[in-house]
Image (tube, rainbow, N blue to C red; front, side):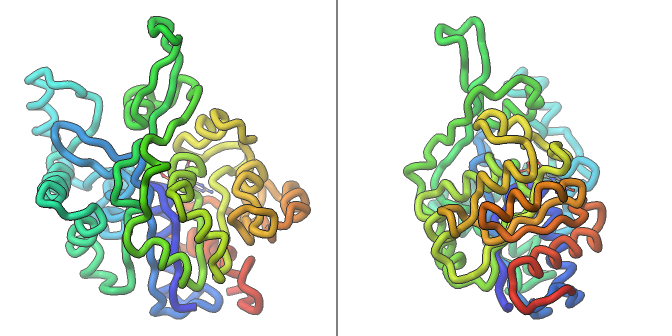
Length: 342
Ligand code: GDP
Ligand code: CA
């Protein structure tokens, strides 16, 4: 295999990609050439405008992580960050004050916003930003695409006794950052998704790739939104490549993040099997050929196989690059016949 494609959210997707690229370079992915190319199709429904700046959290987390600019403790934003601009904005009393905007990070948002204002689509702008972060290390071997150039925003309905309807919608960032996902998400709404068009290259990549991977990203607000861009789910169902996913739920927990809240809000069981069956087998109208789950959830393998999915249980904690590369190798072996163990 010479070309792999990954549908990614932010932190979970970025960590997986680090391990995947590590495994490709080390030649430990069965059947995958050491110079194989990788295309990342990233979620953009977490994006928003703040203080006049366009912020794309998942694109930036992937870009900074793979470009070695991420703050590893926080998992988002820039390493060695300072916060002067944020403090100054707060001193003016400008809301919102709860969103983290570091000085170094602001430079990225300024470049992006200026290019968008000049008329370039987000996909071209992302390509320009990646010239700094990805091209020096990966050259043509790694491409980062936004799922769409159109504006799509995830909003979350939460209870609000003072609102006439008893509920109110907040932007995904307000739900996640200000409210820390601590109140129930009564409904998740993807504003603009139905009218969005896949960014240039997205459908072509899915159609022509040798393997499509759904990493352990949030199945609702990351992978779910990518699949929700009109045309993408059909392209995944139609591709001649095998499609394999890795469970973001380990032992009924989301490890880190907010997948539990999101799954609950759409009525999906918070388990490896619940997520796998929600994606579904391509043979039964879904998007997956194989679903890799954690060894702790091994008792769910037969349930998944009965629904037409290839399934295996292996360690799925992304503790370091080697562990994550081993996950990627197991995912490849699961769906690629004759690839054998790495
Ligand atoms: P976000 O945009 O930053 O929320 O990142 P993603 O959507 O890409 O991924 C977030 C999800 O990754 C979390 O909800 C977890 O379910 C999952 N996750 C994070 N770390 C791990 C890990 O070590 N193993 C597994 N299996 N899943 C993980
Ligand atoms: Ca995200």
